[in-house]
Image 1 (cartoon, rainbow, N blue to C red):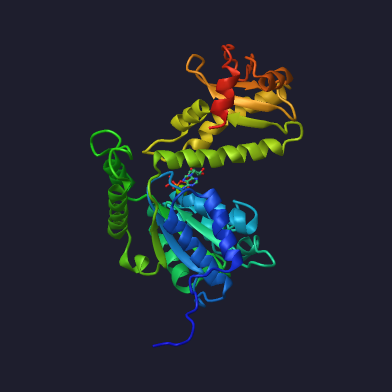
Image 2: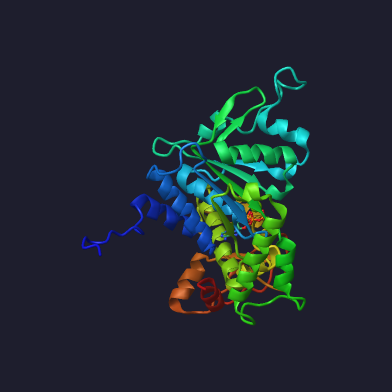
Length: 381
Ligand SMILES: Nc1ncnc2c1ncn2[C@@H]1O[C@H](COP(=O)(O)OP(=O)(O)OP(=O)(O)O)[C@@H](O)[C@H]1O
Ligand SMILES: [Mg+2]
């Protein structure tokens, strides 16, 4: 029996703990994926990654719109200051073996050799290195669509951490994390979620049973589709869970905060906007569902919120320092906007009923303004 004090091998370094916290602020749920990312970061920063192999190779499986691509972008944003600091290979674009030259360039002498600029090069990989962190992210999206030629390349990269370009230059991937995503089994998972009886609401059935089934379905689909030699080369397979309604609402809150940040960075529009409960429900309905997760959320926010905000700004209906309320009214259809004027602030202070000034951001007809009490109450939700 050991008589020495037991060391805490679960304790993270402060920068790994900071990375984890920052990732959790951007990614809703997906605990296993967050842990996998932090483990990887900790192993790399301690210098314990295997020599001659990529820093890590992770396969992310799970339904569409559950955060598989987003977690890689979020990690890049945190570590390199830019969500686009990822070399992204959309495998759907490389379904034919001859298209592989777009990835690695064609051999000298081939037609078009000079015009093809390989996507994966040493320079591209090191472009995002910082003084502190010499790490690169390489992401293969929709891996199930890869051609045989791409599979061969990938197996070589996973095995030896090198890639030979068309002109025989070698790319070293030993400072690179290789991520792969697939929504294989997505159809079956959707089927599971529908259960043949419409949507299974979380309150009707405990999510955990569904969750386990999703995991099993994805893993089985991967085993059916991918060769054992590929599966054996992976460090980890993480199955992303479908997001529940309240988690989708959290994703919406993150996205709204991102829009607010953008607004605060504009030259003349440093105003604050608050979206009421009804407004949020409307955006959720437009941008998310159980089948597509949060896949269309950004698009719905751009269409229903960002474009009208741009109209309001460009027509000087909203200015620096204003507080803008964003609400939804079934009689109008899209979102409605109004701002708290001086008179409103004073009336609110005196607890008198007030009229809000409704803004025509989308050309809709003005609607009866909600009461100050409703606006205050709802916006605080
Ligand atoms: N878990 C999550 N946390 C935060 N945002 C999320 C999450 N899941 C989805 N999103 C939001 O939804 C958008 C789409 O998600 P993402 O691109 O990661 O889907 P995906 O799982 O890669 O789906 P697909 O298999 O269709 O590529 C993201 O840009 C992000 O705004
Ligand atoms: Mg994706």
